[in-house]
Image (cartoon, rainbow, N blue to C red; front, side, top):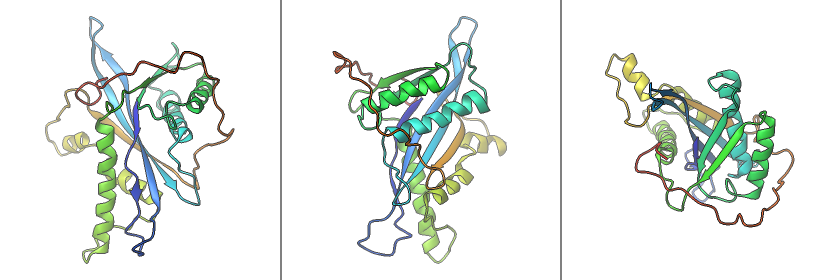
Length: 252
């Protein structure tokens, strides 16, 4: 998995005041690579990639702070889907999650996150979780552009709704943004081309198979039970090796 926070979406079109602070919706993007296909010699030929987007309402009604609770709660939903619902990841032998992320202490590289992932492993029957942290300024990828595209689409919809044509729709809530994108983006560009009888275009590294959208709001709150517990510090672990991304998405 490769994950990062995308752009925040301000609901400006639904706010008539010129100096008001509009409500913000935060995006968390996760690229999930799974189901590898291997050749006769053991070399990997291909794999499947899905994109998950978690929209979170950050308002008086719901705490959508971009922190470790947001991260671990979202990853928990993804793991449950692939191990329990879709069952594309078998529980025997012990499954592994390889996470690639930036070194933000509040979200990823902090003692609270390490404590939560330790409990996460126990919750999922001893699943192994490997956390890989990026060197500074070396974690750009499709996940960054993905958040921008989704926010741009929502903004265009609200802009169209405010003009005389009325072809768009006003998006006053986080859930309304997610529902708009779920309607339009769940079927990927590859799927649209195939349905239209066109030639299937393949990315040289991977092709997006499915898109999933989830919403954190007052009706589906980010789990924050247990408070902000921290893992005990281990002497000598302040300095860790970091990786730098290769040129191109999905190649770490």
